[in-house]
Image 1 (cartoon, rainbow, N blue to C red):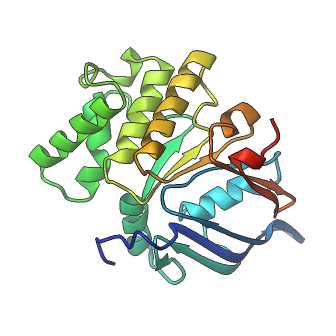
Image 2: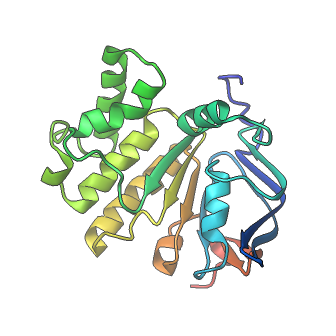
Length: 239
């Protein structure tokens, strides 16, 4: 896998992806043939009601699950056939995850939390500390680097999670309901950070059920019953 990104190729290429789960004798068709492309530097919100398939699609895009049929390329890498070690490498280096529940290690400083993916990548301590400090500064937490999660507000914890997602310079940031546990002020702050990152060229894929959150994206994809029903640019999305 080349470390040099081809800036002309899409970050996400999903072609005819289906996902079927077996629950005893019952088959659940979570995705029914999804095709979509996300270009480098795009800011996409994926919306849908419970059972629409958006969580399944997120898991496939995040290399946390595999499609039943169809093809998925992430930053030019066809993930079909990759073994667990190769998938772990792809998740660590090409995807920056931001989850609703922050997923920070409790009794560990903010800077140490941000360093984790760099440590897993085998980076030396001095270099990963330098990168982690820069990432925290980028999300406005340069003065909170030694604080534990319990000493931070929910919005600040989510900003630490965003800094951690940035640390490996991934092909995209995949944010799953990142404002779901936040008040309106913290929601605005987190979305402002994601918008600024996108303005700097970062590719953002945001999973949400909240229209006001999706409105911050450049493009909104809506799923229903495992299918893409609309895919609109911001100027096309009804207010």
